[in-house]
Image (cartoon, rainbow, N blue to C red; front, top):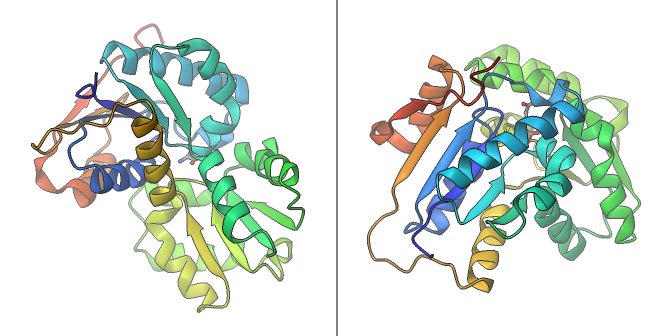
Length: 269
Ligand code: DGL
C-alpha cells in the first residue's frame, strides 16, 4: 500500500543524509529510520557480521510495515544487498546506495578518472571497482578513510582536527590525479564542505544522497507505490543504543520535531 512507510537504515547518523534527501524529494512519504548505533562502525566489522545485522534490521523494518527498504549505508550495501534480496523476497522493495551511484557515474563521468573514499569494509569489497569495470570504466582509484566516521559520529565535524584529517587523507598518492571523487560512505556528506574546501574546485565531489532519493522515487513509481496523499509524511527514528551525538545530528537535519526511540532488537546480546 502506498501509505506504508519507507524503511531506511545505517549504522548511525550517516543514513540520515539519505533519509533527509528522500524526505525532501518525497515530502508525503512516511519513513522509519533505524541507526544501529550498538554496532557502529560497520566499516571495521567483517562482512558476515554486517550481513547478520542487516538481515535483523530488515526484519524490524518489515515488522514496522515498510513497503520499501533503503540500505542507506555503503558498507551494508556491499556486504548484505544480495542476502537481503533473498531474505525479504517480495515482502518489500529493496534498494542500495551503490547501484544508483554506479548508474550515475556511467551516465555522467565515464570518461573521467574516478576516486572513491569509503570505509575499510566498502573499499575491501572492491564493489565499486567491480561494478564500474562491468560498465567498462577502469580508471578507478580508491582509499579507505575510516577515521572520518568516528569524528562525525562524535560530533567533531566542525572541529579543525577534522579538516586536518580530511587533508591528510585526500593528499594520499592513492588519489593522485582524480577528476571526480565519490563519497562512498553516507556519513561523508556531513563533511562535504571540508572535502570541497581541500579541492578548491579542482575535482568534483559526488555524494549519493539525491541520487539515491531519485532511485527511491523511480522504484516506488515503477511499483505504483508512491504516496499521493496531500499531508506531510510522518517520520519515526529508532536507534539500537541511545547516544546524545545521534540526537544532536538528527535534530540538525529534522529540527526539534523528532522523537528518538530506542529499539532493543539485540536483546540477546
Ligand atoms: N555510513 C556507512 C557507510 O556508508 C557506514 C559507516 C560505518 O559504520 O563504518 O558505509
